[in-house]
Length: 260
Image (cartoon, rainbow, N blue to C red; front, side, top):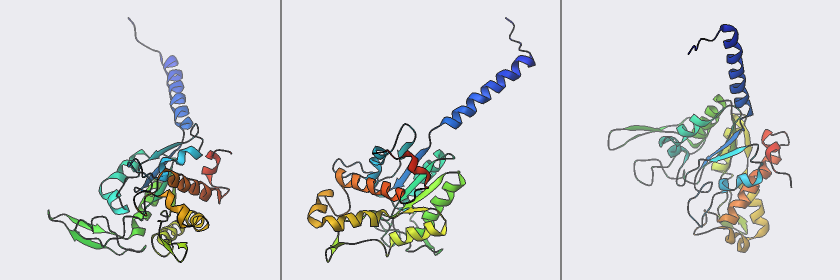
């Protein structure tokens, strides 16, 4: 059998093949990657995270949602355990990365079990050196530094980062829900502004709803503690994320939101 192909026939075949490949890349739906902790993704049957329900508000024939959040993780451990490395390897141009952290960052960073997840407070360039039992040296950064890393590496892939403040806990003072606007919520917003990326104040949007509903109703949206929502509570937070997106009518994700 003669398998020789003339150049006159080969070139059109190559052009056709490249056209198919290019069209496949162009037609690929964008993906929303979500990173965070258990309030975003939770494997407990009673406790649920809002990231698991975000797709119900979106046209999933045009955009995909890939929830890579993991219970118990902070910004620091999400990177340390190479979870961010995995997400970063999947991100393509035109994708989106939604990031919400803050619930697990509060402990003093040290080599104890309780300090494993902790970060330095604020958004600056301060660091702390930790030496583990095996001699490994770890440099711990501020919460803002880790968020900034997610943002910059997302941008480097041609994708769009969106910073989201942590959900409010079911904690009250004088009839109002306690907010994170002097800590992690504040720092998340500061870094988003410094890096000129979109910020959704999920903490405030949902807290405003809680204030209107009151403690008796709100306790029905949590299971087991004051931090983890049940399905109803998770859906409320997912809706709050959508509401946050709609505040900027020009945001490119808005075209994927389902019409009522």
